[in-house]
Every structure is written in C-alpha cells, then in structure tokens.
Image 1 (cartoon, helix red, strand yellow):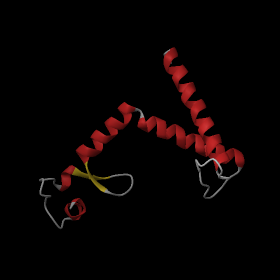
Image 2: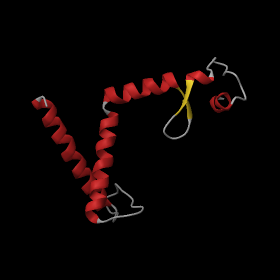
Image 3: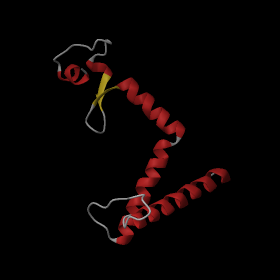
Image 4: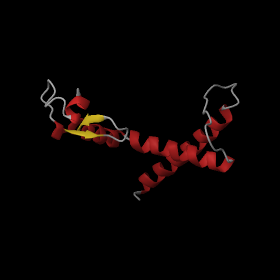
Length: 108
C-alpha cells in the first residue's frame, strides 16, 4: 500500500496516509515519517543504536586485525571453527562497552 501511494497509483492508504507523510528509509523501503521518527527516538533512548554501532565497530576492527576480507561467519556454537572470531569480537565489544560506561560515570 505504501509503495503504491509513493508511486502515485493511490492517493492515500485506508488509514489516510498520503505521499507527503511518507519517506524512503535507508534500506529503500517506503515508511511513514512519523513511525520512522518514533523508532529512531526509541532506538536512541533504549541504547540499541549505540550498542549495535559498538558491535559493528568491534567486528570491523577484529576483521581488519586478522586480515579477513569477504564473508566470514560469527558463529556462537562452542565446537565451531568460526567461534574464535565470534569470541574475539565479543571481547572487543565488551571492552568498548566497559570504556563507555567508565566515561559516562566520570561525566565525560
């Protein structure tokens, strides 16, 4: 429905959402502006965005240290050979999280 309104096939959705109320998100999907703004706000308030950003930075740093390019699984299973990469990323992520907690408690 939202895509049809965005492309002009419909003037509004049954919930009366018009093209001016819509936007394209980072993944290229058509979403309501209000829902997008609300989700961004909730994401920042509960810390999910910051936590995900730290995980991605930790994974990128470990991959760069080990010279890994292309696809590499981060497998949580204990017996898997991919587990060592997961454990290293987890340690790096925990360290960055601890650093941010000490900075926050210090008031920086």
